[in-house]
Image 1 (tube, rainbow, N blue to C red):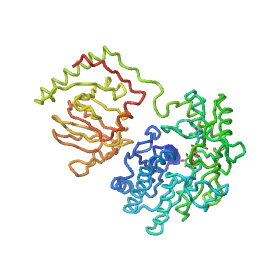
Image 2: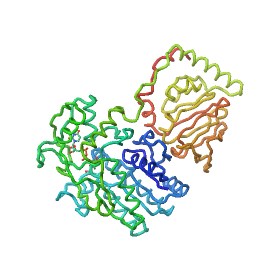
Image 3: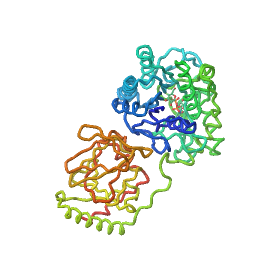
Image 4: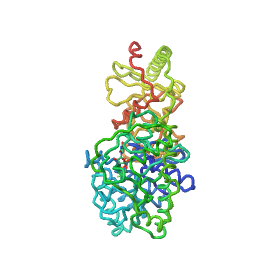
Length: 511
Ligand code: UFG
């Protein structure tokens, strides 16, 4: 079993696809802070945080993991300059936690996602692996620091590791279903293709006075599918006793202007651009010496020809102009119909409270959110916010034959479920439909998907961070309780999802 941290991310999801295609057992581990669960069809996902060493250890042991491919990290150079401590915490701290978990679970093999940013502004080009490391950004520093820690861990604990230094990862799956969907997007090729789609007015060329043939920066663009292949070869090489650092690039550089011109040819769009100031920290030229990866890993990139790479990326961007979200907005239910439905459900909920002898919370100001992408209407679920506690706290007040769709709830990273009133019966499953581990009253219990867990009034269960892929009310009975999230930005994800209609004001006269 192979564990892929950051498996829901751009490169991680391509890795998982390759493992699926080759029939190699694997699981993804991702906190979904940046990743997209939609990019992992068919791959089991444990939605957890790198800093949760206990959970990582549990996962490594429970799934008898033999090797880890570690992608999970923060990756924006600019962001790292603005908040270097957050980068150190996530990239270095997170990897320390992973290495601790691997030690505890006695997992020895690691493939680590590193970067050309460890070299900084290089003295020579193409850059060999033994070139001095002088990272010019906190991001590059964190990756270099982790590489150093990994090397020390190899000496101290018998870890066996391969560090892969990517140059400019780009492209999308040849099938067009996986691709780059960063938010915000900073990378050149997606930005140029967004301009081709009309999502941006023009492309800013950051610097046109570099010591390069046309004055713009030169980079070594490598196809994400080729990168995934290199990880597979690295896993294999580890079993032969190969360790160390490998550049992953093609050995060929293209300038920013050349990339834009290729995008024009592939897309047939004029793609307006304008010259802008240099972006701080950009080296003029970054091109890999790729001989080591070719000779030792046997890696031969097959899709990294720039035109091919852009064509794959273009297919993805055309089919997914909004990234991993549904292209068709969900039809909003008509307000009149909705109002009457809600009133009916409210009456029904009140009857349910009464039948159970439960007391309604004082002065409930009900609001209805459309979390379930409209499914609540079909499924008979009402999710309400109580105005008395509006801050990121949705109350699951009443449901009958209810279902909170995974599309809603897999986005949550950490959930507490509290039974505030009466009795709350919940069922849940992990990604892929399996059992989940829940922490309840301080101890962990495993709950099967077909087995409801019931909370009595006052009880609280913490869903082990994100391990639960979806949860929904047990359908046979009325359930009354509350779901609260401990993660502020979760609601942003939910509410900003363009699929979710918002209907301000329509309930004003309901209560
Ligand atoms: N660029 C523009 N305009 C844009 C965006 C980028 O001119 O709107 C230029 C950049 O200045 C750079 C080139 O396009 O010269 C490529 O920029 P990217 O942001 O796509 O990629 P980088 O080379 O800056 O960064 C990549 C990875 C980093 C990694 C680095 C290693 O994204 O994670 O390579 O050198 F650290």
